[in-house]
Length: 119
Picture 1 (cartoon, rainbow, N blue to C red):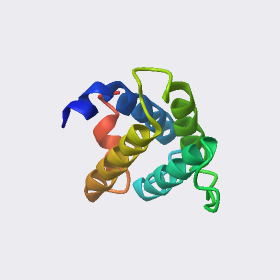
Picture 2 (cartoon, rainbow, N blue to C red):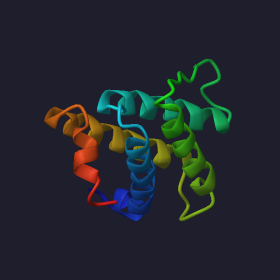
Picture 3 (cartoon, rainbow, N blue to C red):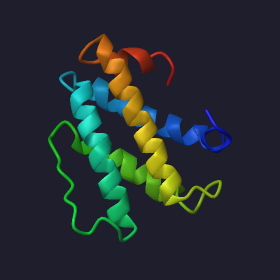
Picture 4 (spheres, rainbow, N blue to C red):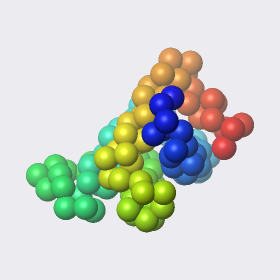
C-alpha cells in the first residue's frame, strides 16, 4: 500500500461497510454482481462530476444499493474530506473491486466471507 492509499484508508472502509450491508441484505448477492456494481459505481460517480456522459450505468435489483452507496460516499467525500479527488476515489473503488475479484476465488461470496468480521 502506498502513502496515498494509506491517507484514504477510511474511504476504503466506508465503501466496504456499504458492501457488507448489501451482502447481508441480499443473501443472493454474489461477488460477480458486486464486481459489476463497483464498475458501474465508477461510471455513476464520474457522471455526478460531469464525466462519462456517453456511458450508461447498468443496474440490477441486487446492484442498485451498491451503486447508490458508493455514489453517496463519493459525493460526501470528494473535494470535501482530506482533499480526496475524484481520481483517488475511482482508484479506491477499483482497489475494492480487485479485492472482490481476488477473494471470489474462495466461493461465490468469498469477499463477504473475508470482510464480514472486519468491517
